[in-house]
Length: 323
Ligand code: MG
Image 1 (cartoon, rainbow, N blue to C red):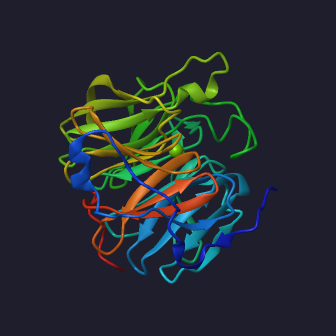
Image 2 (image 1 turned 90 degrees about the vertical axis):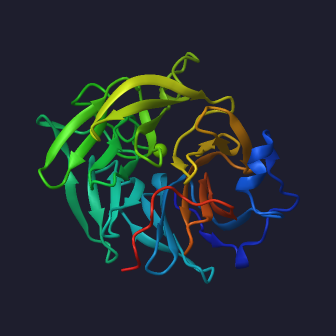
């Protein structure tokens, strides 16, 4: 494997000379004056899937090619939480505060307990194995929405090479009360990160199909859908086209702004599609999550490292109470 030394950074030293890039004056209202970007840990190969855990304020994230989960604690200590985790990628919390994980290697969405045990949630669609679930969110009604692109079966780098049984890359909605799995979108070529607007009337889905295309084609945009009756998607459209590489994971704040990963850091996009500004990161950036006791710390995964910045807004998704 590709294990590298995992290096904690004492007290998360600020990045020297760091400053946000303000592209619209309203970006300032989302930032803390004098805010700094801190690197909390490094030594991963490809960091992804951060989730903030209210029980102890720690952040769990994936180091996918190393097939392990890492965990940063508020006292600055960093540890390997779980090795041989079958190439988990995205994580989120359900309303009970338990961790929902996307597993490339197990080709399923599963529950991850804090003792490291895994419980399958869903792994087949119409009798066919899923490709490799990438990112996952939980709606206010408890349904689990996830993307299923090919990146965990395309090669052995982030999973196990295999043919797609479904032959398509879909966005799914799973209802854990009825065990119903519905494909809700086939319009996105290779769906990746996803997030609802604060009122859940819009679903944003990143399309990273440019990753799979050597010819320079494919998509590198964020799609948007209207959500009908809380469960059906309609009116697919390109919401925002990235100009710096690809988006991957994204989150929405309480005002409806989209905080998306990009080649060069985090880009913040207003609900009307205007980019307000950027938070530069010196590594290719994959995902982010709002956390902290008041929901206003943005934890960012980028290539080898985990970063954090305190912001002046908070995530639209309420964090379950500690438990
Ligand atoms: Mg992703």
